[in-house]
Length: 379
Image (cartoon, rainbow, N blue to C red; front, side, top):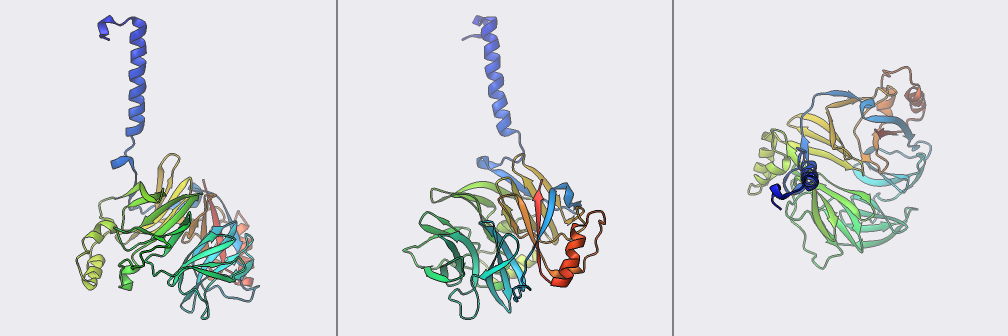
């Protein structure tokens, strides 16, 4: 309809339609975080800020892991997961890793894997499975009960990757060493091993994680790929894209070493400044990342409801004057889980005398020698 033939009322309706369409387009396109293919971008900036954790944490509390009462040693805590309201601790003792199960109150229940005589060799990751757990290890995927008793070998394939999840009747293993084969499914008729990185110093630069956001909703991340994927209909679908801020990411640098022999590749990765993600965690509402920009450590916390980001180099526990340390896990309740050794707790100088929570904990840990899980509820 020509504009000159429109009535005043029709012109008003036409203007409202145009305004509505324009508003929808702007709402979809104005954010600078939207990149190619409609992906949200996560910018990995360097930050030298030191933030009080009260600026992003609502409250803190502590779970004492009562290992001394059980007559055991936990050694070095390598990783933490919360499954079914209980804590699964991956620890390393005398060069060997194993998983230990603790109640929500920190009582030791049972060791789930590990030991010289264990059928599970070099365990990497653990997930809830059946009435117990499935464990990804260097010699396949195994099932154990909640009582720690070995049930069966679920898959004997030699697979590349250190994190995994279950999807239907299959297990999906995340491969942090290959940009082409990000995941592989098992059981599989194809028993050929995916080529991996044999140099241990190069392998230590790499990281992967499979995050369960809900039933049949997993997100997958590896450092050799600048994309976070979701697993949908047995396929990887990109959801977020990482972007460097002035420096190449490890994934970008990794492309340049594909044709190099491992000694030269290691030297190249050592010499070139790049961005290297060491820890990717995600819940329904937040994304948490620890990474290095060159030689500077930075943390980013992204609120997914408004895509606001906080960047900082160090956090200071100003809530109760306690310790802030390396985050191991982000729970579905938006709680950061941070394992802290008895040594760090007993040797810490309390900066906030007004709140007595950490003060009381410190006196208790000096006597017991137990490690602690610090739980920080994100705001």
